[in-house]
Length: 389
View 1 (cartoon, rainbow, N blue to C red):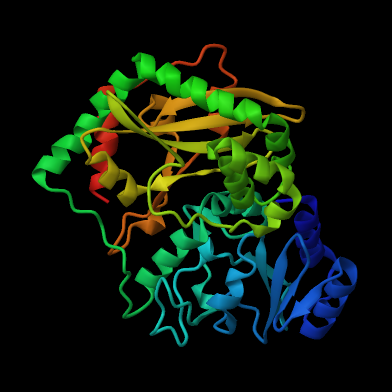
View 2 (cartoon, one colour; view 1 turned 90 degrees about the horizontal axis):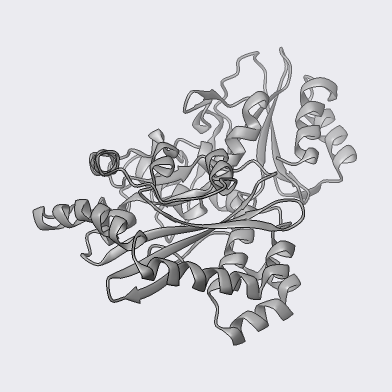
């Protein structure tokens, strides 16, 4: 999180008035130049909803906000501050990643109909063993940035009482299961073929055509918008790329903040020995982030195609330039070891999403000589674990 967010958290915990919600709102608004949108106070860096409790408990059942209202602020840190009559102020992260379910008026909630509100009791107090508290906000928001609105909406639709998600787990046939496991061999053969170098050179050439623009885009704070813009710059044809470059400033605000495409990867190229699907990931090494890897069901379904190979093209950016790029198989041993499968995603209807430990990608980008290291046994065990979710 940026320094403005950290200063606000410190203010609420250490300096803000206590026990009186109106006084806390007034002091915070004056200090942080908030705009008020109904129940939400916000600026360009974060948003906050203030609530009140007469007790000293950390539990509260107050209705916090509608899900449709939260959507407007979900790309920046969204805090809930509980002002307690008998205790100090409590602050929680309440972005969609940290909601267990939607409680009120949610019977019509679906992927295409955003309905319902969440209560204070619907906010997770523990996420994967990390408390939802100021000491962990950096770590938690980095996880949230690696997921997308669509991912969390799918989970919330499924988790909300009497609601069933429209997306269901991919259930492969026996033949498809074998093809999925065979994707390890396909990946190995492709990374050792001449076409691997053809694809790598193609992506590097595309990156070089918009190198300056990628560096400009890397300073966009919102990770989803930054990633979408850089992906578009690289995958576009020359005419489309020039349009993006000419309108770079405006396009930052125009691009959607989450991925709406239905397929796997950003860049699809067919070769005689494989159909490749490559996901483009920008890694700004001085920023803490755990980028989304893929939707697990989409990944398994694509790997059930007998020609599919899935790759990641990592672009490493430091304070000054693009310092390295990597074309990496999804089955690279270090990627597998650093794939985070969100435990709260293991629901009834989908297997959820996977993320990467961003520190591991930083380390790979700094390797003197990168090589695709695919261990068949490790990859097979990994696929088995995905299928069993």
